[in-house]
Image 1 (cartoon, chains in turn orange, brown):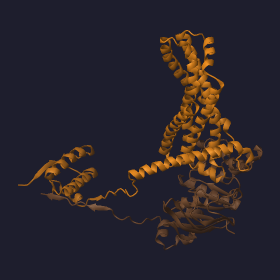
Image 2: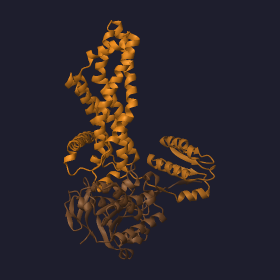
Image 3: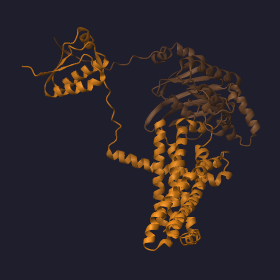
Image 4: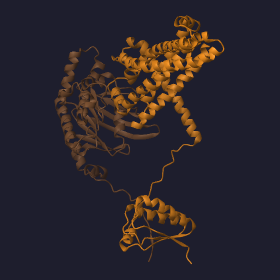
Length: 355
Length: 259
């Protein structure tokens, strides 16, 4: 007695049905031999032929028999001439092991630091020595970048910082009122805005808005060979593209950070008036307890460094892009993640140094 | 004296050697094609000649002056060369006129705007694109963009022009007009042109001499006529638009039939 299980094929084998039939056939082959009954089949297209070839190959691998029964002579003739492409094997010779991957990742991180340091030194050099170096290029563009990266971001930065400061003041005022410390709201909020929230929040917003736009622009230029074209014309991309953006963000971030801190304090003033019944005049007088000139200078220095991080990380990601449109997207994402992480790490370092 | 002389150039990426030993020269007013199958290193060769990548060894001489392998091309030589990139590589935020003026402004920052505009207009006239003076690259067709890029490449009226796949992505008529433009520029400005190309029609129309790259070496260095009558299989196949039959990578399936 034979060990065959028969699977009958429908009149028409449609691509969407193949998966179900194939699953049944493979199941049969795991337990015994297979007989495919094609007496109902009228015609067989490429999908049907490939399906039968796959089943036959699977039977060979399982060391089972797969016999075809009832197929019309024309189908039998066409199947007897059938050849199948051999799918090439994936070349895994370059595939890295865990340790190699770890080393590669570490190497790339170090390369990132090196590129960042190189860009920083180039930008610092050309910012200071541009008028004295005969190799400087006669192009500007800082004002335009200041407008695009800084002025155009004012609205969103001020609005978001204002709203966050408002909710922060609102929540802390209820707690302060409970312990009778409502009068400390102004000083505490003022200090927090200038020392932390203002610089940090405005930099993070700018990293998402302006940093990503820098990366996308430079990366698109890299992909479109515009950077190569600049180099063949003797125009260094760092001086032409990175320097104006570096200078613009060096100015824009401290200004935006300072102004957004003031907006945060204004939000606190509204909350103080509504919740703590502190008049705006008294609020402003109390602000002096938390804010002083040194704090403002420290805040501006911090913001300046955050601006450098945004500009240089964005430029580095844009210039190092390789590939096509998908690489531009990846570089932009990477820019936002790296610059926000960099800003937060730098902020932690500043907290350690300052306080 | 040659406008360009490449001697024993060896180049690659990291451990991978793409060009093993490349030597050729380009005479004044010569149109020299760099040919070869896709991935044979034509663009790598061009990038190394333009110093966009640094070769491992070998020497490069422009107009009789040797440039050390690791040194950039000095400005005095750069002004005597121009480059046309495959996609045009025009800066999209600048108008066509500003793009053409870019290399001029780089080298002559004190040039008056009116003078600069007149030079730009002249270059655009040469490529029959004066009407696009104030247009942005995004407003131009593929062929017009190539011509605008060509105008930028000839901003200094160079003696040596490099073109990377000038006909790529263009329809046959536009491609033909670009070829005629290159011939016209060769005749009017007396420039030498080094072209990386695949387009057979274009190659047959404008080539004086060519090099054919294979496996990192020059398989043939000769005139178009020599190439057309070559017995070397790869060269013959290239000009005859034939390809070697691929090795069959298929297998028969032995079906078992039951009556």
